Image (cartoon, rainbow, N blue to C red; front, top):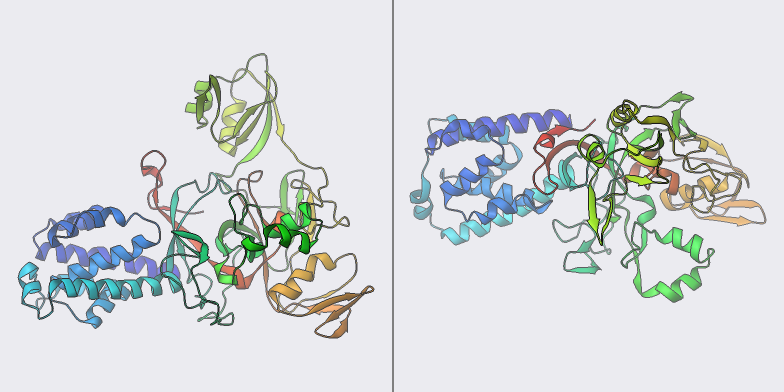
Length: 510
């Protein structure tokens, strides 16, 4: 449904602009050129060209594009709230109507001046409506996101701008409905100040019900372990509160609060940081990582064609040339203080003939064809690490590359609770499903009653990055409940790295 609405909206928007361009004296063919079409609207309507460039700002750019379209419809004599609402929410119907109806004509500045309200007042009214419309669109239909880290490379690259379809899994009501528009959890100029008010809270609700996430979808979700953060540089979600509590303070909250108490920030569920990963396991699946290879239900999992992982590569005598590494594999080298090194840490030399290389399957094949190639094996981390790997329990001596088997809980499923598995499920029972829990001398008390079993109220998912050795994912913090699912990453609409990456514009995400 989400894809159908998006495609209809896109086609109708451009067809409508074709007719509107023709009426307003612009070459109508240019209506189909992305970005350039809004540049022409800005020129025609006498809007400052600064607003065109501001469209490229993540999140706020949506509001500006809507505002530009509303101003354009006003030059056709359409000043009412109903007309503006139709242009925003039904563009595939209303814009073609404006473009092809014999009853609608281009009025330009003349019609703007004839209208009773001043032009300034109309622009303000349009801006207010655009803010409301954009807020509704980004809350319930789709939203723009920017990739900040390399955990999904090279499926997604840093500074890819995405459209995330929120209809895919059912539009979710905001838990905190009163918040500053177009920002997420803190104010841009005041990073220690929350952007929302907590005194009104809405229970978890999806307007059209929850639609199950499909295995291998690329999903945006609220970071489950980000409900409490240390709001300081080098902490936040990249060094989560619970990790610091466990590793640095041995679980002693009083000691942690004594050091960081003034900087602890507790977010509502919908205001935790947004993460994007691939859903590799759905409710009822059994996932396992065997020597760096992911298995789902005892079968090798899907490997994205642009996924990356670390390999240990040996050459015979001489290392690969920097020219090959840059031109053929895409590594980026920089020189500082007379030393040359790979900018993103994707290539590192262990010795003159042995290197660790973060590569896609295609790049691995290119390496194997080099005349000085000798051997390759996956660079593995198989040392048990219960201090950092979920569920942080010596009963589960797992690592990044040797993990599981682990069963993913399913709504309505009942498990038997024991001392050996309680660390897998305690956070699900208490934080995500809002029960009280106590462990009294080995007896589990849930909501005041002794319990030996528990029946799950929600579905859970397992998320992993396509860049398997550079991803903070479910291996480090566990299950993702359905309540935290935001939407499906559908389309890259813009991308840059020292300039536009044209080959990634309007690329679907697989």
